[in-house]
Length: 258
Image (cartoon, rainbow, N blue to C red; front, top):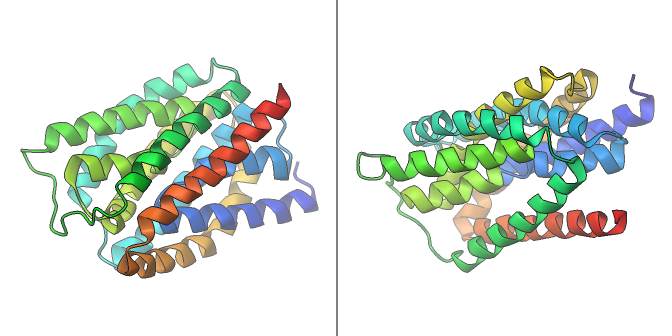
């Protein structure tokens, strides 16, 4: 049962999660899990992971609608990527439940630093505006989708911080299209992981509802800011530094817990 403070904090944290999803197509569960544990006060990391997966999936679907209206979603690429990733997410989330939750968070923080560095290095690459998924690159899209889904399910995350670089690498689409398209897969991966955790009783439904409600406004604001940053060529830089900030916090907390 949530108390009044947890409801307020949960709504505020949900707004931050929605903002991240709308802005960079990722950061949902990466933000939601530590916020649930360290701000809202969820004691069990696996419950935080399962609950965040559900909340992020719903908020990602909402943000997807905002990007779809702005015509920044490559639907075919999103469907192929998500279809391949669901298989990986199912296997990954099953394995992840058997691993110590604190170790999962620390390991993922290290992976985030590597991904952020790669995105920052390639930030000046504007991509190909008309990039699509075709026979020539379908194999790469499926491969990246399967790998991303496995990692996403294992760490209990929506996967946006992995999907966006994966879409860019496999199709060379512009960053703004990768952000919008990634939300198709984030929604699918999040629901797959959430259902797996829910089957083990590891979802706090009330807290998920609070996070979802808070994330609605954040998603709308994030999508609007993403379009402005894309016009200025700054979206990749914002994406990378957001990864670094969250990873640094998670590593600091993991070290303090030793």
